[in-house]
Length: 339
Image 1 (cartoon, rainbow, N blue to C red):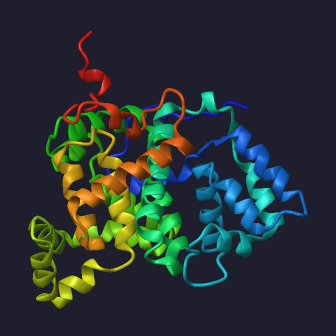
Image 2: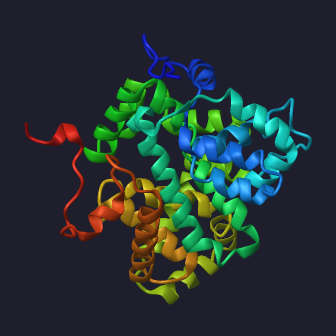
């Protein structure tokens, strides 16, 4: 059944008003994913892991289950569930089925493209995280996988409620390189990262998600120091400089930073493979993994191709498409194209 998506009227201008609005937005689920998951829940031969794997195809389903399991009235433990399987265990199959029945299920073509695009970016980020980091941090692969998938989820209800605002933000900040603070104050009245942090806290998303937003908002000085080291072309000298500052090294080497690295790689790649923002995050990733920039670029390209094979959809842009373009070519925003 069709549902209202875009919110009419003026956009909120305060953090509290934005949180209240976005908390009320119902994010639709693709009907084919919904039907497959419901069939699995009703099949007593399927395990929780089977059901969790089926849910991966629908980020909105994953978010709904995680939010419900981590809601203060439902959470049986103080800490938020860090993985979908834990969330399903907390809820149980019966309550999970009841939750799904309350969700709007729509044909894929009826789900707004702005939302589907941002969800595909999240899926690409999850692929980057799994490919780059999960094998090296094998015992933490679930935290890496689910944290990466959900990091940008606070933007999903915004993509439904005010898609034109989010599209304008992408045009001006990502494509035209305007000052983010000025643009966001003009469009939203608040900083985007502060809004995402508030929503992530309200939903009690996995700790690695909220930690990533805290880093972007409160620990930018340390990030700048690490980036300065990452720009050093001598890999051995990089490690010597990082070892000389043990506090900074411990801060940077936290496993939770994998979620932030993967999402910024995926988001920056939306513009093209040759842009300064992407280069910064590739340099940071290379330093984190103690390898060369060339090696990281090759790995990131491979993971983008793997993501495209799984997640690419008609009428949506996936950065893997740009791998066959001339190196300096970037994807223009539709409003930047000549009529």
